[in-house]
Picture 1 (spheres, rainbow, N blue to C red):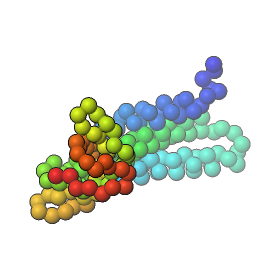
Picture 2: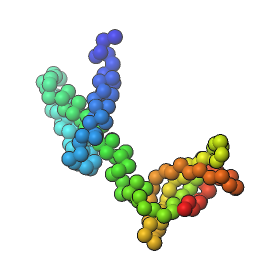
Picture 3: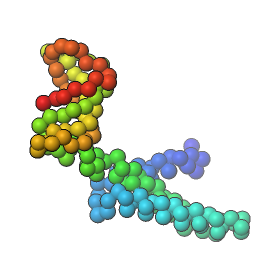
Picture 4: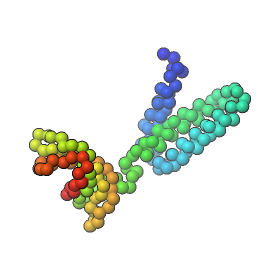
Length: 156
């Protein structure tokens, strides 16, 4: 299998390298990585546009290096966007919450002595006030009624 016949393998490798490099890229937040990624791809597009009239590949090393840098930075940007630690309203940032209010996501799952379900948190009660929040909590209950998708409940 010649490696150059499957370029998506290289692209996936460099994107995955960016995802793996994300924990070590803490010196900038996700927005900077996103804009830097767009800038690199803009330079890449400019290089392709300038190369177009000649019909020859004049930037033999410049364009691939820019493309691979862009893919690595795209992996870092993707990871920064998906990192719940970067979202101020995530329930991770409310460690002293007294109660959650949210919507049930799935049907009850019977367990040995209880019943499990997933709750999409909409707000938390903290410090005497309800605050908008986001996240998913796994809840266990042992009583009636059965919970179904769309039910709104308060968990204390």
